[in-house]
Image 1 (cartoon, rainbow, N blue to C red):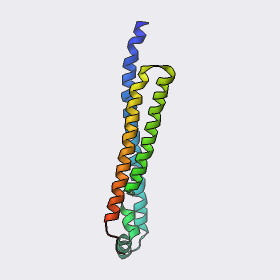
Image 2: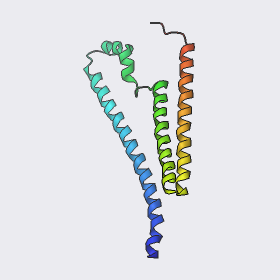
Image 3: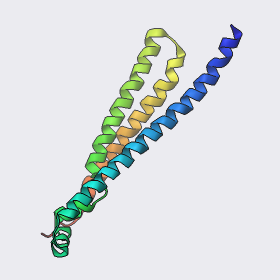
Image 4: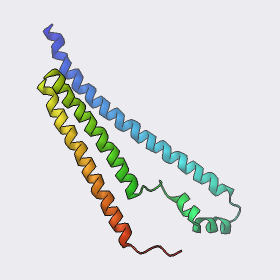
Amino acid sequence: MENEVFWIPIVSIIGSFAMVISIVWFVSRARQRTAQYRAEVQLKMIERFGTAAEFTQFLESPAGKQFLQEAPRRTANDRGVRGISTGIILLFIGLGFAAGYWAEGDPGFLVPAFILIGLGVGFLVSSAVSLKLAKNIDSTQPPAVS
């Protein structure tokens, strides 16, 4: 019996590291695959142009500039909305842990509850400040001339 209990922390620690490594590997492979597909599409588009003049004319257009960008740019509003959604999710998970403490009376639920609630509130405040600053910056910049 004691021999079985000895292996639990070892397997847990190794499993945790293996999980983190596999998540990082899957995310990097997905990004690499996306970049490879984007490069293939760009090559196929470039092959369609008959002359260099057509190609340079396309690159000077707004569609050509957007086509050559590595990835679509996210605006400050997009990042703010993503931060708000992340904050709400973390806040509710933290409230779930707090409800677990309330229902079970186990103080082990309090530490993750406070950490997750704090992270959720931090994301919400950060996103609100970012959206406010982005709105102020947009209002102080002169309009673009077409």
